Image (cartoon, rainbow, N blue to C red; front, side, top):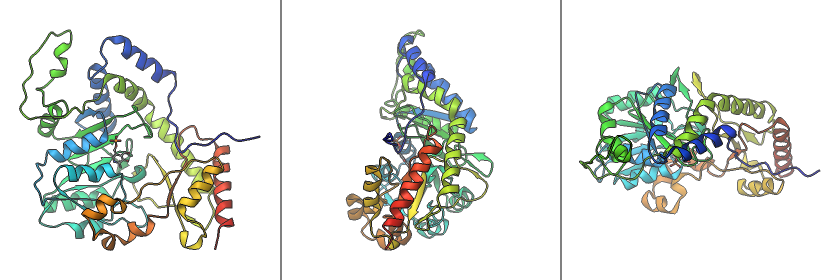
Length: 385
Ligand SMILES: Cc1ncc(COP(=O)(O)O)c(C=O)c1O
């Protein structure tokens, strides 16, 4: 009997998401409106953040948060090389210089030691990225930020539902940005959310997400009657729509159940993966990891095949995998921009060809996981040097 292809990721929608979208389509209001307001309030409740702004992506949130700093050429923003390019692209697009601090070899998140060393008088901000959902060690990061008067933006694209020392991610840094892209733990297709405890900052960012139009101008075509708007600062078209938020409201209500299912699958991998030809990154204490990813590190020096060849073989056997990430300093643009980076980033450079993310989604079955584990371990041992 042939087995169905196991994708790397599958989103979890049922009739509730379908009904919510249909209700919104029939409501007469499909762009930013009441559903987005409900979603923003729900995110505030879920994360304990005071203010939330629904956006069309996490990238938009990174852009807005960085814009709020009015960065000047020469200003530096420190982040990790092991992130999606959006994190660093936005630093560049805001006119600042990205500074990559190496990762911790155990957790794969930014190394606090490397971060501290990277701080210079030109540093303006830090963007810790909670890779795969595991929170960075935020206490020392916030301490360093306080000492050096730095702004902190948490890239929590993977980390809705994460906790650090009993505190939900979304309230610790100056700004936190979440992604609801199709493959995230909860999804609105495309979408993002920015949270902050800073009311004044939110007052500036909210209009910037909608052309710079004055407050609540989105209501100008509502039953409240036409209202004029005024622009204080030119903005962008970054708002979330009610169709997206309709999905988000249903997904957020399920978020903890989805995380529980992901945790169970991760636990199964951790218990049953035995091959000495791979290593599982470790976790820091006192966190809740929402397990956006299950990453392994291949001991490629002991293998006859590369990570990318293994990806091809797994695909032939019906298993989808992914890589998180090609480190930033391997991309041609960043090689040109930061030619010295490789020399300063030995750990990220070393693991660049070793990371592999295995299928992880709530509906993944133990039988599928047994097949993934057996196939992976058989391929590793038959390709041992
Ligand atoms: C770490 C990280 N940051 C930022 C983003 C950008 O998110 P979005 O696609 O919602 O703009 C992603 C998306 O995958 C990501 O993984």
